[in-house]
Length: 260
Ligand SMILES: C[S@@+](CC[C@H](N)C(=O)[O-])C[C@H]1O[C@@H](n2cnc3c(N)ncnc32)[C@H](O)[C@@H]1O
Image (cartoon, rainbow, N blue to C red; front, side):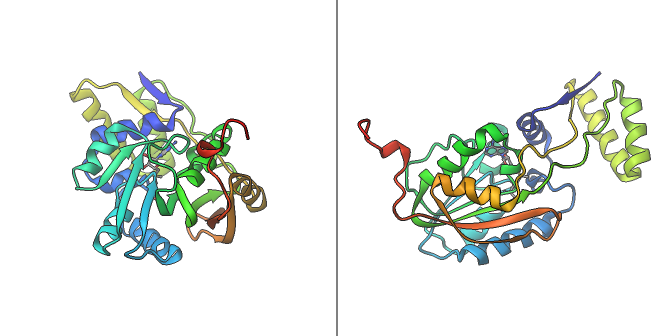
């Protein structure tokens, strides 16, 4: 029996438990290290990361940005991941990482001069978006640069069909994606069987949140973020990257007096 996880977080957890190559935690698929590297080089340029900065990377994946910050001598670099299982893997690389969700980040107000949250908000359900943007704003220093990347404008492709047996699943994957994907899943299934683990595969679409640029900019503005610029993400298409600044006058909720 194959269990399908509707929950992307559970998928991240399961992936981290079985990960062989840490770069898989960036969730771009196999052998995409150079893509992840290029994306983060562009982010470093876009936010103008310097030695004076305190960086927070929300949903830091395989730690690529933290590594870049470390090697360029950034004052501090902290990463958050959705699950303790991912934290355990990335921490072994020597990075300062913790479990934390976009809408509940265990870090003090105004900790970061740069906040990056790339290819993460698309996984967050709409009903947690305002809280997530508020939280990102809360941890940012006044005038901090805030990079929110890979926000889709539309839902992803239709979910994959569901199959109850390994054989049906494998046959579908072979027909739809070819030998490489078929073999990859076969290996995972063999591993699950050998280690007596349940078979859990992600259920179809990974996009929970999407918005047209004007809609997203308005949501961010409500949270206290002022748009600097936005532009289309190169690949995959249909996504935008946004650079904001925290309004100098924004007061984080945590510091608003009860009587206000
Ligand atoms: C697609 S990966 C992106 C990784 C990295 N930012 C990059 O661009 O390569 C998604 C990351 O978001 C994290 N994540 C997923 N849901 C999250 C949530 N609700 N709050 C914080 N992080 C989350 C996962 O732990 C994972 O590291």
